[in-house]
Image: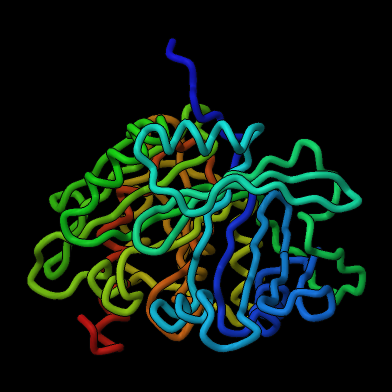
Length: 364
């Protein structure tokens, strides 16, 4: 078997550029049950950027805002709105990860950097992705601080209960017309990923819109990136809408795993999070399509949770409405009961639900 030239331990963190990191951190704490574990800003000597580091189980989000005008972060927000800038991957050797991918054609975002403080040393390096997104390789084996140098730990905590989110299951990219195979080949040839599955516009279409998707996975299966591209339809697809409002390619949604989706979604709804809704007819046909499941269909219908089955088991999933003013980034909550797929059986119902929201927004 060929040696994995880019061994990944998993997702280290996801950095979002947002217009107001302080308020965004409060939202993710209050609604999604994250805990703020670290901070940098004026109080720590950072004159350019304020960042809050939020954690729940293995999920780490970094929310960053500029502290003055005319900055790269500010320009990113002006173009894209709030969105994902850096997908950081946890590696044992950041320099090797950087060199191996650049050697295979990756464009440099930034050269390897050593960051030091009293807690040790972290090495980071970056390569460019679709749009203005980047992968950052993070080597932290010689570091025992709370996050990384430049940040201080946060001890004062507001009492927001976690909601059972465990880890990043996958992250989905929307790329421009004709770009899907470019980025599929990037992950295959530059990062050593393999293609798990693909869907074309026959699989993913409604009366109005269509898209194509391919799912890329690293060698140990810990990191998965579905990549979407619009396909020709009668009206503007959700991917086209995203590309218009985001100003190009970027991360469409982050899928976070839970062990009890009913409890997680109930809590989120009680905390004011809005989800896409599917019609009641979806649940009338569900039992015949899915077979026996542990959950009561009546409860799933009340919450709007979707179910799909593959040869390995079944999964439950639900999608939030966009989490910022532009109809761009949203979250998926997913619980896997054996299934390793991505809910192909739910695509039609899901996309029709998105189209209903597009119609309300006047962007269909």
